[in-house]
Image (tube, rainbow, N blue to C red):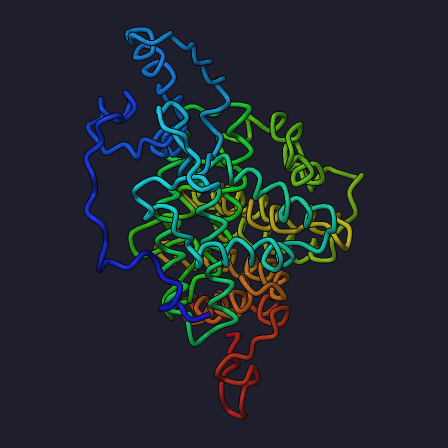
Length: 432
């Protein structure tokens, strides 16, 4: 289906808007156009507030010369329901039936179907949701439960459509630019929701927040890469998406029990970093990378012995990375590894990210060891190529004296330096 054929509503030949004379009280007070949809208008649905149509109509009925008709108030939960764009106005004196068919409202513009977004939602449910995890139970959550949350929370739906758009663009490179722009637009609009509710996390909205943060991580990796992309940081500091994700993560950690008891609880129950110490735990299986990470930790402690502040920052980042390796190693073959791998970026200190922004060599060496963990997800379309991209940049930026500590990450990722990885006769090694 061509994007141009299914794009948004055409700008030409739109019908002029009629004035809203019988709009709800909320729209009138906000001085915005009400679509006068009954029993709740779309503006109230969008902002998740209870439309006061019933109160207005009840007052009109009470003051009418006709027999007053008491209209029931909407329950509080109805503010989250999405009603059809138009419904027949049963309060009208004339019959809503014309020749046996329901009469349409005079403006049919908002009854048009947005075929692009419908296609994106269908693609997410039938295809994209299967690319997030190999676990059948978690696939069902992403395919069924997450869209159900999206029908209640607009920002979740926007994130779903954004990720699905990039998935479509990945498989349809001839239309990639169209889908990328649509993904950016959906996510930009969706960001307003979490920003507004972050100060007011409740049992109801903590699960949607968690889903939004996970989809945001996917979206950020799935976006087309530029040569200077460094994933977590940019020239101006922490990347915007990671800054948001770190904020959401810090808040929803206190809501863990709420999420576990909700419809998406299975996404969390196998992964818990709280209180886990890879250096003292004897109950978790030992990952094969532990010896190498321990050697690097000892090197950091020696190298930074005269800089206690830097030592604490780098050792802390390594300890969090070691936790991620241990947790990933303890998971079953079908368990989702996305959360323990991406949680490292939310657990490291701001000071470490500041040093990574400045491309300090020790921070780059540690980041190279994280790139190995990220490379373990290279089979996923939205992660593919990131490990190789990062190790290429790190190798070019790190001081030569530290390159020996890049040998293991380079070999694990399978990347070959421009030197070919071997020293020619009479030349120095690329690791020196």
